Image 1 (cartoon, rainbow, N blue to C red):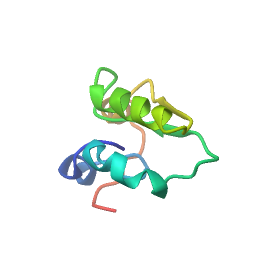
Image 2 (tube, one colour):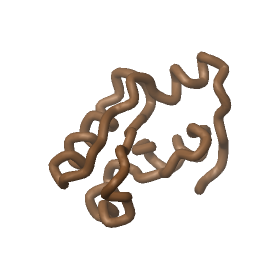
Image 3 (spheres, rainbow, N blue to C red):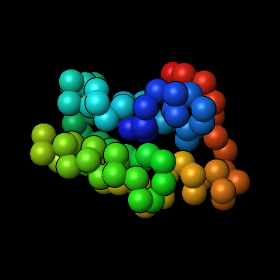
Length: 85
């Protein structure tokens, strides 16, 4: 989840790791180099996830953007967790 902290706290996917886009570059070493990373943000047109994937791929990590974001997840009635990490 690459959204700002208040948005993450208001609701995120179960098991999501919160790495706001502005902190991502400084925290690349926190990510597993041998696993695919799926970035998501507000909705399918949110640019934050696109930017995160470009940054991750540029640093040799395998990453892709979730097709949908938290908005579509909630609208589908899927579980959402609230609170900070």
